[in-house]
Image (cartoon, rainbow, N blue to C red):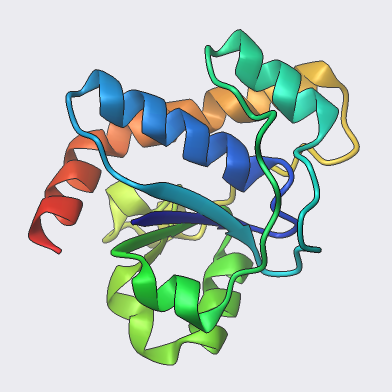
Length: 157
């Protein structure tokens, strides 16, 4: 399973999860994808703007319900992509021996470039629909640029 992680699991990570599922499917690869938040309240719906932005991208976020990142989720994941370096640090505090599979989404395609590796996906929380659409576009581009590496990682895991 691929796990995307953000803060509350109502915006960035659920958008990343459904976009990744769509892009993997389009690439002919079916693989489990989930999302979680380091400070998520359980069973919250995705934000209204995230749902609308994903509908425009051909993805359905209506069934989404938030969940907290747990040691079990981290253990079950083959690859964990976080929205920020702080989220990566939070995941590693939950499961310190998981460093080999936890990356920032911005840094994943640029592991050896510390500037890119520490970049963050901008948090749209509290923003308007355009802010969410811009965030979704950033996430989609990052996943697309990493798709070959993601597929290779999950096949080798």
